[in-house]
Image 1: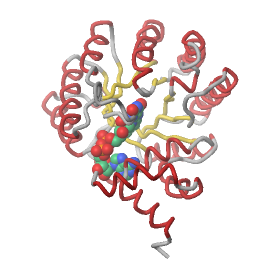
Image 2: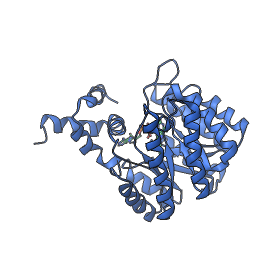
Image 3: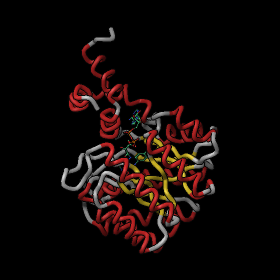
Image 4: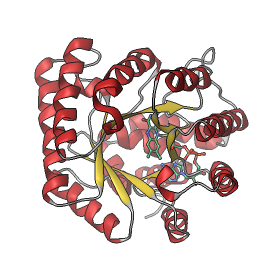
Length: 302
Ligand SMILES: Cc1cc2nc3c(=O)[nH]c(=O)nc-3n(C[C@H](O)[C@H](O)[C@H](O)COP(=O)(O)OP(=O)(O)OC[C@H]3O[C@@H](n4cnc5c(N)ncnc54)[C@H](O)[C@@H]3O)c2cc1C
């Protein structure tokens, strides 16, 4: 990211919400479950799978966590009712991980019981580093009871991630989404250099594929996509043995090309009224979008 783009990204928190909402529109299905279902249907019609995410992050009260649990439950019912090719992604802190681990476990087990009943799947998204240990520990516990119905996420920007994958592999059958990681983490524990993150991503991917880990390869980065496609070819993997994953609204042409060449791809479909934090993260990642926001604010387009 250029210096100028960095400055623009840093000022996004100052941008009025309606403007953020306008520019974030491509990244979010809408505010309601119906919006989510509609977008997933459109993706499914193109042969693209989905994972649905009720927007919302760290909650401060049990009531809020229970409300989030109720919304996630509705997603699982809707996927079944509408016969969607989709699963559910949850953020551990939206279901109470920051409040009390036992309470979080209760909530996630509640959802996993429903998901298992529908032969569906729940993925624990990975948040920032204070929650890495507790999320991975919870995944290990849940995996013993829910097997292939549950998965977790590993972030290639963390120094620890290769060891985490080895630890998961040693402990049982593993299903991960591998991504770069989106939070701003301390330099002591994370790589900042783009090349270093790419190298670590590829190294972890190779290790996982060699060890028969099911990997959701979650990236829009051509360097990583090309590496993954090459490895998949060299290893002669069947299409059921891995999947690509992308975010709604990002690099749709590349996405469609990957699907067109016979690979399975899942799109992350966020929806809900708590769209603001997610939107600002997405806009910060996309300097050209951030530039449009600035132009709109300062009336340069008019
Ligand atoms: C399905 C999925 C789930 C994820 N889950 C998590 C998670 O649980 N925890 C976590 O920390 N992170 C998660 N992420 C985010 C991830 O960590 C990265 O921040 C994000 O994917 C950008 O990294 P990249 O590999 O696409 O590479 P980048 O180098 O950031 O992007 C490569 C190219 O993609 C395009 N691009 C990327 N982002 C955008 C954008 N917002 N708008 C327009 N174009 C864009 C640009 O052309 C860019 O050059 C997830 C990502 C995906 C795809």
